[in-house]
Length: 482
Ligand code: NAD
Image 1 (tube, protein in one colour):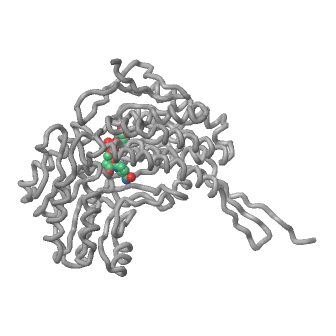
Image 2 (tube, rainbow, N blue to C red):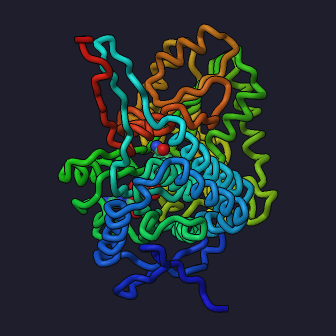
Image 3 (cartoon, rainbow, N blue to C red):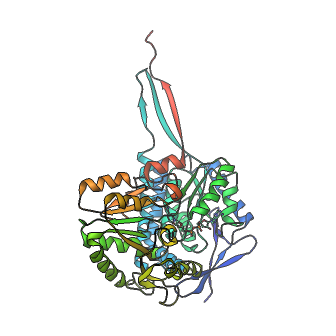
């Protein structure tokens, strides 16, 4: 069998690197290389930006009507549905997520395209009738060339969360997927060409961050917007690059979500969401409910049920549709998560359940208790299936515990008390607060974080503000009547 090779996608064609450089794409479940990937250097980045710049400056993508653009995007969405399994398998082999979850990600990615294509048609302008006999209206003009840099935890879903609104609003794009998860991005670009996207509108360049494709893309002065999802430290570096070129940047960064369960909660519901919140995608989720605070009256009962549900998750081959939980995404990440488990005892903590002794790169669903609030397990984003749990007594204490973090992406509250739910919705310092649920999204709603969790919001009109240059046109409708 000839080995699979994954190329860049530049100006409507799949190409390998000008230098011929490649890197390995390793399947974390088998720990074997399953493909080789073009390693983008300066020349490849230059070619991609040149193509995107030309496609923007010469059209027709930015000047075509939103209806025509949305027709092409709809064809891409159809093709993605036809290639659902291929796209899902690409993410499974790249990062070990269970196939059932990867299929769900593909469906969400399709929705990203259909939603933003519709939104760009219906939210194209506002009018402001003026008393003075004038009339003002807005225009949302495409910003230009967008660089989208994606992480490895939801490779296709988070790439399309950026690429779809950027394209729907008439921009041209260069997508750099994470080095661990390149496959679905190239597949997506191939499908986009088949759907009728003009050459140069959607480009993909593979490679690493520092001194590689990521850095070269973010430092290029021909770029008009950078949208980034990844670690907070990388976000700081990218913000500096964007500020040097004075361009807007959107940063969706790390999280350390608090999950607060009150005595009056529906415990079946709370347990089931708490398990999803920290063990879905093996905890490699920015929104993970990695800090669990349970009111003392139900603490013991909740923890027994939570542990039982965590231990019941089906661990296995991610390509098997019955699997609910598989390996971490890479050996490097497995080692990082392992260092947190190794230091639990030293910080006075207890491993109630889980651990990294299941073989391969698997860290079982892990529950930690008895740790002090200054332990790194409470402060750092571990980004694995590891939850720290502790009881609390009062609502004020729960709010204080939840807000005691540098991050502020999301929080969850489980209570049947309506007033309390709204009070906490206001008091929790986070971009999203979920009440009696988790992970449910409306693509019109703002999405993003405060503090170290990021800058800016995306979703609906928030994506429009970022990916366009809003303009006001003011004209006289009638004069004085003389
Ligand atoms: P990462 O920051 O290591 O890498 C993300 C991307 O940035 C990759 O494509 C990488 O190649 C690139 N990159 C790295 N250094 C760069 C540089 N100097 N210049 C330009 N590009 C560079 O993050 P990751 O490990 O891939 O992803 C996990 C992180 O992403 C976690 O912190 C997680 O919380 C966060 N995340 C946030 C959200 C959100 O919506 N807020 C969603 C998912 C993941």
